[in-house]
Image (cartoon, rainbow, N blue to C red):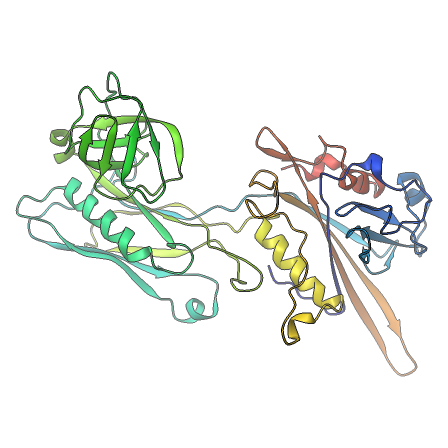
Length: 428
């Protein structure tokens, strides 16, 4: 997320692991020795801690800062001076990113793929990403062309398109870019013994909880229990080991509930191709333009239904956005070491799932407090307005899968309380 900053831009990152009880006493001088890494506090211009009562006593024209600990021996991260009466608070709670989903053919309710023998079909993807290349002249990518055989069915075409889409897109930038799955309108049946499976992303191998009683090679297995869940053609079954015709493109998981559709029923069923955007790899040094993938899908047979099912959303307070804002703000702090030879990477406090120690997707959520203000700058021969912007990212506590600021006892919760705001307003 890139921001305009005519004068001042500052980012403060809270860590919900830092408890309010460990903060310096109200009125005490805040230093690197008593403010832990990731703890945040409200201070006066003398760097003495303020609480809700002290802040509430300030009047228009009084000034304050928000300070973040960076660790013992490290300089504190401070916002610019903010003037009471000129500051404006805006709260944006965490919203997860959403990836686009488009379905060609059967969409879970209606539609179908075409049926014709010895015929070529393909899916055309136009990238609509917010980058320099695809804003002005979108790139075209293809799943296909593939050709049906002398006894074409929707099941055959769906399997061919998914296989080709997987191969064509696995080398695209952004970690395959899209995933392709087949869905089918035929209700599944439950096997008497094989009722769940362990699956691995990008693997054709599946491990069943037991050897199947009724389904065999040539049938289709559904991972889930609804017609919107993906189906894969089975090429072999040996004991509890099952092999798919195409690699599994869902998340690695154990104990996934399964159903099956016989080859005979699949031959007359309606099929669709579900195309889903994938989360792009991101770091502030190389993949610097964060966005959820956006695309337009068309099919070679224009009579086939194309359903935009889910729109893409970048989210708010996702770790990629926070990382980019943190990175950009360091330029205003004078950290220009990356221009040196050799370059020196800037430090980074944002929590990144499976990268930062102990961080997961559920503990790397942030809600945002934006503080904006305008200062009158008057000189002998000029008058100007200086625009300031401080972004406070508040790390949320994971409560049964949902991010919460109000449920914890963090320094971030103490900070928003001191500012006269409700911690509950920052909950996911």
